[in-house]
Amino acid sequence: MKRSPDSPERRAMASADGPVRRGTASADGPVRRATASADGPVRRAVAAVGGPAAGFVPVVRQAGRATGLLVLAAATAFGSYLFITVLLLSAVGTVAVVGAFLLPETVLLVRRIAGAKRQQTAAWTGREIPEVYRPLTGAVRERVRTALRDPGTLTDFRWMAACYLYGWLPVLVIPLWPVGLVVDGVGCALLRRRAVVLPLISRLADLDAAWSTALLTPSPKARLTERVEELTQTRAGAIAAHAAELRRIERDLHDGTQARLVSLSMRIGLAKRACDRDPVSVRRLLSEAQDLADEALTELRHVVRGVHPPILTDRGLVGAVRALAASSALEVAVRVDGLTDATRAPAAVEAAAYFVVAESLTNAAKHSGAPTAGVRLSRVPRGLRVRVRDEGRGGADVGAAGVSKGAAEVSGGVGTGLPGMRRRVAALDGTTTVTSPVGGPTVIEVELPCVW
Image 1 (cartoon, helix red, strand yellow):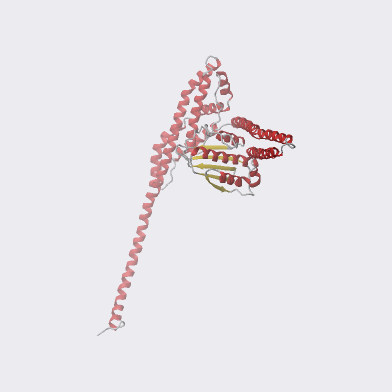
Image 2: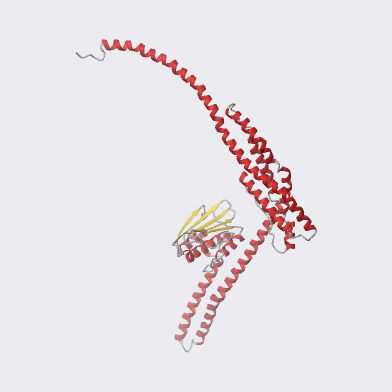
């Protein structure tokens, strides 16, 4: 006999089982709430022990890094204390004229010590302190005069004198470490307090770096002197580049266009003489004269392109560079970022950028052995950036300024190779960087300042 789902027996069992389940649930609720209420203080206790203890480790690491800086500062200060003897000997020798040669060497040694301090301070603050010095070259008298008149010498000696006063700061680290480990260790791990003693070591390092930065930063007079010397060099380079350009134009006109025009004039004169008696020769002479005139016009266009390419005026820098890429012996990919017909750089900047690309592509086609190259023109907030890259063999002889010393001159009359490129860019206060490791790639990057 089958029982229906709603049989009286099942309803009776369900009614009897209900109070049991509700009783179990009602009894289980206080147990869970009690467990949760008891688990809260445990978690808070674990967090109280683990949280500050975990935050104590970065404090110790930062204090250790600051201690390293202060130890180096103490070593520099101790070296400065010992160096006072050398300074006194150099001063006495200079006054007595007998040991005047000691002064430039002493100044060079002080520059090295100050340079080491600048590096230490930059490693801590993340901001470099520029070095502005005049080169000590020439005879002894000239070197002594330069060392005495250089504003950087006064800056270094002022820092060294002040270092005698604040050079004792690293001594305070000695008592701070044991006190900090005890006080901050107990305060962070048990009392849930912030570290108060060990951070003082970092503040000492900040104080040492701030004073060193203020004392070692070049004076406005030193920066002005450096700027004047830089402008003098760039002006000399611009004058040399201009003179070389004039010689090139004169050579092209003399050897090419002028010779063809002279030959053209001679043929026209011969044609005039033979006009009546030999019409056939006249036609031949006139035909040759026309060919010479066409060649002379081609030479003149070539010279004009070397002075200022007309395509820059007609199509702008982007169009001119694309035309260079199309006519190059390499497969050149051109990428343009932020440059449009409405946002064009000044004419001098566009001309310099055009010659940079032309010389770079010509050098790559002649010497790199690469089948492809890439040109990138980018508009940056302060100017125009040109980047030319080829995947060739590399290995160019790059000097300290990042410019190839032994680059061959570029054919086509657009410039004088990489040195000429550097002079052209420096005349506009720009920068040139060349990287060419053995095996490639060779990357030429030029940045030309301008106002958009």
